[in-house]
Image (cartoon, rainbow, N blue to C red; front, side, top):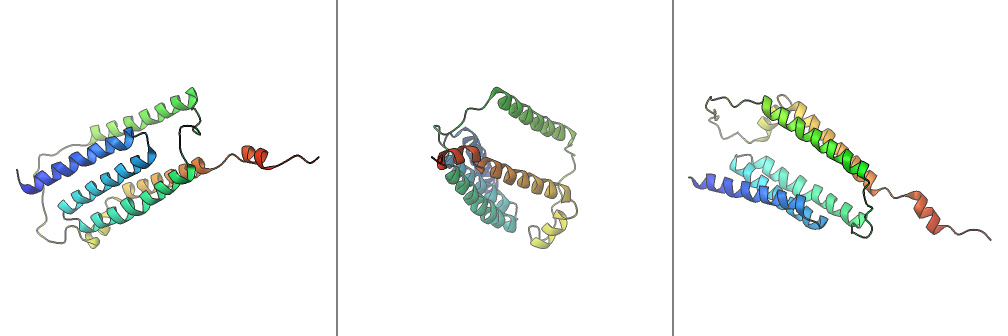
Length: 180
């Protein structure tokens, strides 16, 4: 086993372990920190693939800006067990149906993929991870996944706004006093 392969397996193991900790952690701040570690491991794998630009973008955009936004939202919402409302059985059921639907879509997509036995062709150039080639592939061959991810990020932003929205009826009852 070469040194690069050993580094890949180490980074992959740490990324999967930290991703599991993101899901199982009870403290949302720790969850965000584990997600940052996962992003660093993914950036390390990009470096191993000779895609330095993607590695830097991964660190700056995701591990930097997006995680700061997540932490800011967590601090703004002041999540704790006392203020958390108990979810109804209907919401839990709808969440399970939504998660099952996403899992089913992933399984169907994986079943339709094929692993061809043709050897992988590696271009004989040092321009593999450069911006020009990345842009060409991103906006021609991978335009649909690129746009799908942008819609998923938009849905996540809308979800953050809905979660951050305060109940106006409860606020008005506390702040207004009846006129005598």
